[in-house]
Length: 189
Image (cartoon, rainbow, N blue to C red; front, side, top):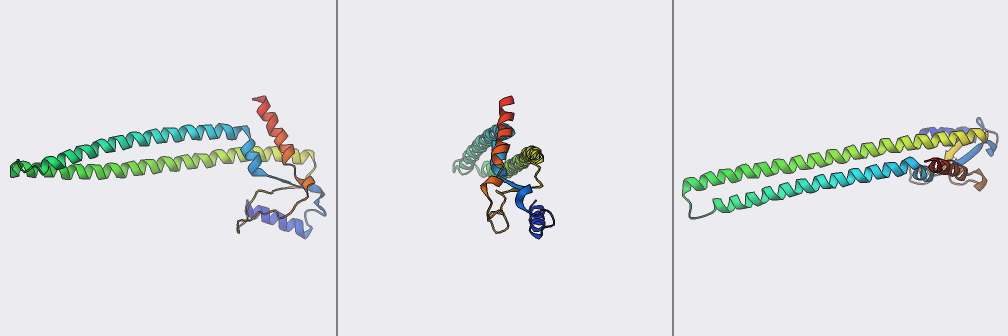
């Protein structure tokens, strides 16, 4: 996207695309994507999934705490001076097995939670991309009606972390026009 934008800006500056700014506009894609009705739905889906993940994590932690409690009891029983050496050895073996089981459970929990978090992040990106594509179609629709040749995202950030659009005349900003289209979508729902 950034290479495409840089190429478009370079072509604009060289004059090969437009002779003037008449066929050009800017939009705030971040604002438009956040305002789109699909973004509301996506945020709710992600909130629900996060609550489910937290519930799953809490259940895992509860199980882990129960296992740790059983381990502590077994360790105390193994350290009891009143038991015979053979019983102590047997209990120490049980403690060693419980330590191993605890470590495996902690690893499985960590892996499971990281995997779920990765899945949620991937889903968030896919959902964002779909909303962004829907907004781009709205932008293209408005740009076509206004006979625009180029629309630049003023919220885009360059490599150095600064805005790609350094300056624009307010009348070139068609964000409000797109927001009206988005509001119409909201009203239809």
